[in-house]
Amino acid sequence: MDDIFGEPIYTYTSEQAADDGVLFDIIQVNPEWAKGLFRYVTMNLMEHGYLNDKEVNISNLMDLLVQSTLIIKNASNGFKDKPDTFYSGDIELPRGQKQKVFISMNEYQKYTIMLPEDY
Image 1 (cartoon, one colour):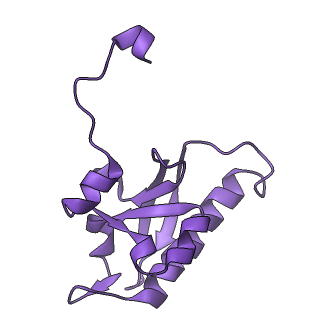
Image 2 (image 1 turned 90 degrees about the horizontal axis):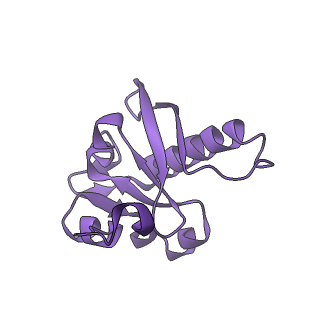
Image 3 (image 1 turned 120 degrees about the horizontal axis):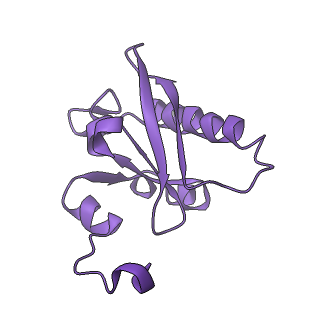
């Protein structure tokens, strides 16, 4: 990309976004999750039942990760296809509502789960 557009003027990393409170780093909950597909969830999505009074609801967060894994699994022919950098699908939020989510690869080659308006 540098060949086409030149050197970036500014970059904003996922780590900086987590420091700013825009992203939630899931390995804060369990460092073993660093081995999985996901690294971040937007705080906007976390506020839909994955945080209760600033405390992480771990069972709800795990459900989000499972539902997001199924979106990728179904879209990638059971993980047989080469991983894509972007997926979208519907999940059920903790309160029972259906919600579209976007799942986008970040600079760590892990995925960030977000609401469409966060993209």
